[in-house]
Image 1: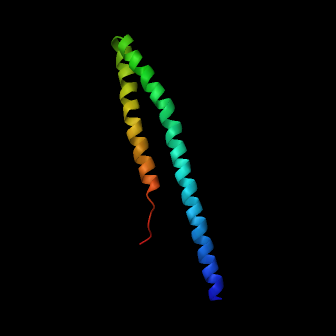
Image 2: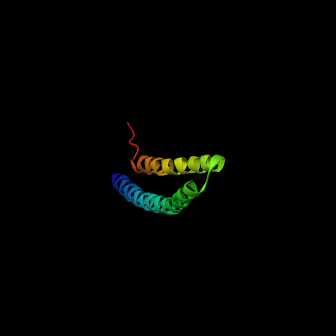
Image 3: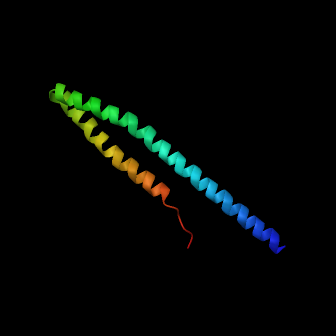
Length: 88
């Protein structure tokens, strides 16, 4: 009976480690997949800010400001997701 428990615990730990590696790979890919197009969008918005006037300039600046905040939010989400929750 004790041997079955030890085998079960070892199997559970192995699966947990595999899931942790998969989660890390997913978060890394997600972060890259979000940042690459975001960098392009922000670059294009910078061009718009230089070219626009009036109300269009205000809209372009709002887009740029929001785009500047997205990487910060993304980094926070990835950091929070990569820290394991420990049972007390």
